[in-house]
Each structure stands twice: as structure tokens, then as C-alpha cells.
Length: 400
Image 1 (tube, rainbow, N blue to C red):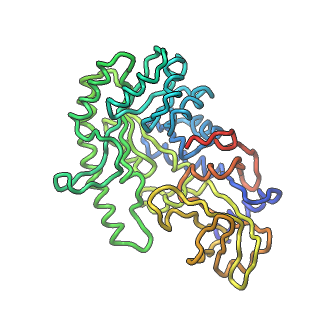
Image 2: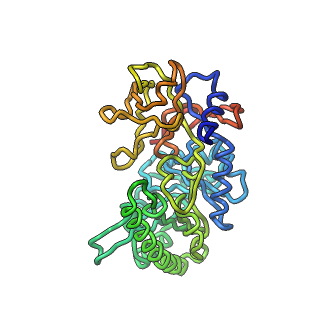
Image 3: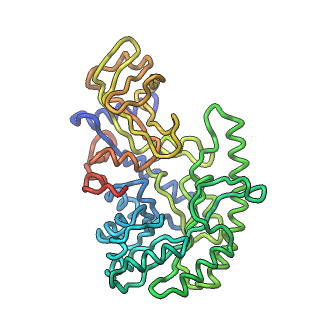
């Protein structure tokens, strides 16, 4: 029996009394992935990216481990909810325009101590001030550095379009703006190199593309390490008490941690290891988060139909954004239908061994987004479900 076949047998036994659709997290795999992230971080603390987890119980499990500290959130409303739930170090990774939430933040000393907001434009500070509604608490601010690699005088750009702050001078100027402004405290810098951390460099069947990605990423790491260090020096000249410099992501943990200027690493997807993280030469994780759909039809030889399953991930539309049939091995989509909202035909010889009511296990393309489809995650240890915990959705929250 292969390792994957053994996993299928375990998951089927563990969920035998649960009807599909059902979502699980294999805690042995989750913990092993967490340990590997800590190893790769080389002693620097890991801030957990909540959007890649979206379950308070599993955020708590990660943060209980040595090597993890703090949360990186994705909306201001989520940040306040987490702070009220007892998480005392929450860095909002994206600028917000949520005026009501800013009013709450500025009026509550506990929230103001726990939450740090992201800025890269003076207009964002204006919006916060206009939203205060009399709240006088100092708002903690982090500046985001644009990590993109610019070539040919800026005519070629590699990387996500995020912050407009690219050069040390631009970031230092924004730091001075914050420092001069009453009601704000500059406490950190964030720089997420998504073109390194979030792009696999070993694409199956694409050796030339993989080689090009590795060359690009090596150049990007060199350029960013030098520029990030210069940015930190420039900002510390304005704000010598800067508390943290955050960088990295699951795919670049060890590279970013090697930079002296970086004080902490962000990671979250590496806990669940969705399918987009299969294509890396720098690490191998264990799939921890899966979902099962039930077989509801057997249309013919070599084909079964499961209920639903059309759970595409965010990003540029393409086949790589679809969940992948994982267990039993050997199933594939019908290219004419793909993953459907209410039914999904699956092709391959393993279909002939599946009966009505059997489970087919899938892996989502990205971490966290799976939790927008399920209220509950069933936690598996060995071949037993040992707990059922709510996702954000299960607690009544859909923050985006």
C-alpha cells in the first residue's frame, strides 16, 4: 500500500460516520509542517498569516508552539475580532478603508495596543483621522515596502502590485510623515516578496520555465536583500525604536530569515500545504487540509460523479486554481466540465472501484480559502477524529 493509499484508508475510517462534503485537518501533518517552518526560520519568530488558516483553534495551536509569535491578519474587522478574542499581537497586512472599525480601534485602549495597521500613503492616515469620532488612542502603524523586481529602468516589473513605496527614500519620507503626525506611532516595516515566496520553482513538466523562475528568484532575492537593508537603515534613522521588520512567506522562509535586517517571518500556507505549494525545490510539506465530496452517480465505465467541488481559488483564472482530486490516486477532471458548482464528473480507472456514497478526497489550490466553504474542520489524529472546530465561517464571520 502506498503512503497516499494509507492516508486515504485512515481518513475514510476517521470520517466513516460523517457524511460528505466534509473538511479535515490532519494534525500530525499540521504539526510536522509547523516544525519544518520553525526549522527553516532559523530562530526568527514566525508570524502566522491568518488568511491561510481562518480557524481560531488552529491559530492557537500554531501559536502555542515555540518559534511562532503574533498574527498577520487580512481585514481590520478580523483584526479587532481576534484582539477581542485574546490575541495580543495582530498585524493587519493590508490597508483598510473600514471607517467604523477605525473608530473602534481609536476608542479602545486594548485594541489599540494589540493591533497594528498597514499604510503606504498619507491619504490612509487622513482616512483614519477622519474616522476617529473622538477616539484618542494612538494608532500603531506599519509601512509596507514594494518588493517587486524592476528591470530595464522600470519597464519590466516582476512581483505583485502592492505598495507604491519602492526606494529607501520613499519609505523614509513616509516614515517622517507618520512620525510628524499626532495620534500615530510607527512600529514596523513589512515586505512580502510574493514572486519568491508564492511562486513554485519546480513546475511539473516545465523544466525551462522552472529554470527561468529559479534564475528570476535568485536575482530578486539578491536585489531585495540589499534594498530592504537600506530601507531599514533609512527608517530607523527616523524611528530608532522600530519594533519589527517582517518579511517572507512559506516559499521563502529560509532565504528571508537569513537577512540580518529582517526580525520576523510571515507564513501560514505552509501549515496546510495546499496544492500550489507542491512545486518548490526548497522544501516539502505534508498535505494537512483536505475536503471530501461524496460519489452520487456512476455514469459509465471509468467515470463517477461527485456532489459539488467547484471551489476555485483566487488569482489569475486557470487550471492551477482548481482543487485537485487527491485520493484515490489517479482521478482527473473531465476537460469539458472541470470542477462544477453542484456536480463534478471524475475520470480514471479508480472510478470503477468507487461506490455510491464513497468519499473522494480533494486538496484546495490555496490555503485558508477552503474555510469559506465549510463551517467546521474535523481534526484527525491517526485514524480518528478527535475534535471538530469552527472555521471563521462557522463562527459567523466572512470578513471578505
